[in-house]
Length: 193
Image 1 (cartoon, rainbow, N blue to C red):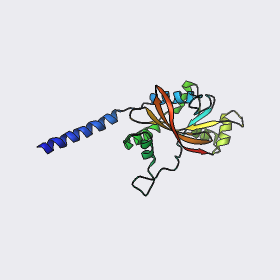
Image 2 (cartoon, rainbow, N blue to C red):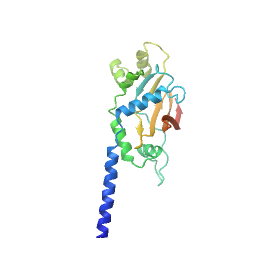
Image 3 (cartoon, one colour):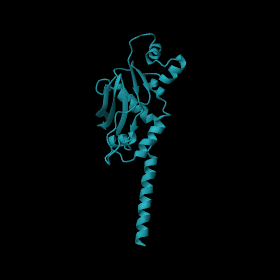
Image 4 (cartoon, helix red, strand yellow):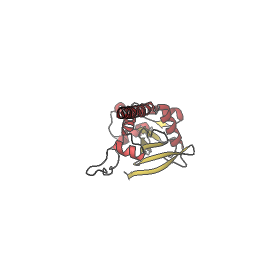
């Protein structure tokens, strides 16, 4: 009898925990507000230089992942993100990553950013050359500066974020909410193109 009650309590507890995690919503509005805040901060965070900078979104390839603690192979990208955000729920991270594919980053135009869809522009111009495509986007100017950003991934508390950025070189940022403001906690996988 005691074993049965204990098992039922454990099953109920696990079920409630899983249900609570499923109820955690990282809305597109939350992501937009986050992106507006961090991209607008050109004096402290400096992820972009100013709102005139061309911004597009895309999937970036992460740097080399650390070796798995159990040995042999490297950890997965989702395990790395979960570890960086100090969460144990890799499925929560994976689900955000999948949902982020539907995120409409063009809404950042409403905040005054110069956002463009690189894939759509390539299709319209029938060019696979990034420089030709961006020259068209930048109204014929040969010199331009563009940034590729991934859609952010958050922990369950929504106080830590994972973001990859490429500005002709790039980095992975772990940002943390400190005193009501997003701050860079760490910058990893830095590289120069």
